[in-house]
Image (tube, rainbow, N blue to C red; front, side, top):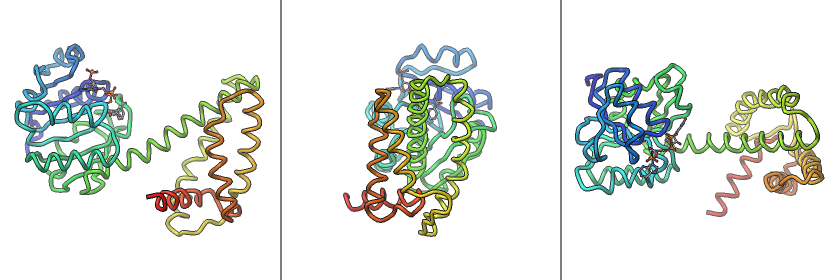
Length: 294
Ligand SMILES: NC(=O)c1ccc[n+]([C@@H]2O[C@H](COP(=O)([O-])OP(=O)(O)OC[C@H]3O[C@@H](n4cnc5c(N)ncnc54)[C@H](OP(=O)(O)O)[C@@H]3O)[C@@H](O)[C@H]2O)c1
C-alpha cells in the first residue's frame, strides 16, 4: 500500500482542516469538500483540490476521511447523495457507538470498507506526536491503511473489530471530560461566590485534578477485582461532603442540579449498605441500575 494514496477529507471544521493539512504535509494528493466551501481556501492554498460535491471528492480519492459534527451529518454527506458510495471510508467524527455500528451496517450493504475512529486529542495535535486516535472495524482493513493513517501523527490504536469500539471509548472519555468540566465550572462559581479570586483558587483546584490519574488506576483495580475496600475514603464520607457543598452552594444561590444528582447517587449507595465501600462501588451501582432498567 503506497503511503501517498489520494485522500479525500470531507468536513473542514477545525479538526477536518487539521487532518487535511497533515495529509498534505505528508505529500498525499488531497481533495477536500465542505458544506460551506469557503473554509477550504487555506487548504487549496496549500495544494488541496476543492471538489464541488462530496460524491465527487470521494470519487477522486482512494481513501475517504470524514470529520463532521455527527453521524446525521455523515449520513447526509456520504449516504444520501446520488453517486457511488466511497470504496473505503474512515470516519473520524464523534458520536455514540450505536451510530458507528449503524454506519458500519450501511457500509456493508453498500460495498464500502469502513473503519470508525475517535480522535482523543485537540485539532492542534494532529500531525504531531501528541495526537491520539483510536480505530475500530475490521483489523485487516486497519492494517491495510495504518501506514497512510500515520500521517495524522501520534499514537494510533486499533481497539476492536466491532465498528463501535472506538466510539465507545470516546463516549466514556467524554463522559469523564464533560462531568469534570462541569465540576470545575461549579467549583469556580462557588469559590467566586465566596469571594475567592480565581487565580488564588487555581493552585488548589489543580491539586484536586492531580488526584484523578491515581484514582483512575485504583478504580480499574477495584472494578477488575470486584472488591471495594474503603482504604482511602468512603462513600459515606463523600455523601457527607456533598451535603456540605450543596448547602454552601444553595446559600450562595448557585444552581445545584448537578450536585443533587451526585448526592442522590451517593445516598442510594449508602441506603443499599455500601457506605463503607470506596467510590468505585458507585460504578458498579450505576452499571447494575442501567442493567436492571434495560
Ligand atoms: N476540534 C477538535 O479539537 C476535536 C477533537 C476531537 C474530536 N473532534 C471531533 O471531530 C469532529 C469535527 O469537529 P470540528 O471541531 O472540526 O467541528 P464541528 O463543529 O464539530 O463540525 C463541523 C463540521 O461539520 C460540518 N457539518 C455540520 N452539519 C452538517 C451537515 N448537516 N451536513 C454536512 N456537514 C455538516 C460543518 O460544515 P460547515 O462548515 O458547512 O458548517 C463542518 O465541516 C466532531 O465530531 C468532533 O467531536 C474534534
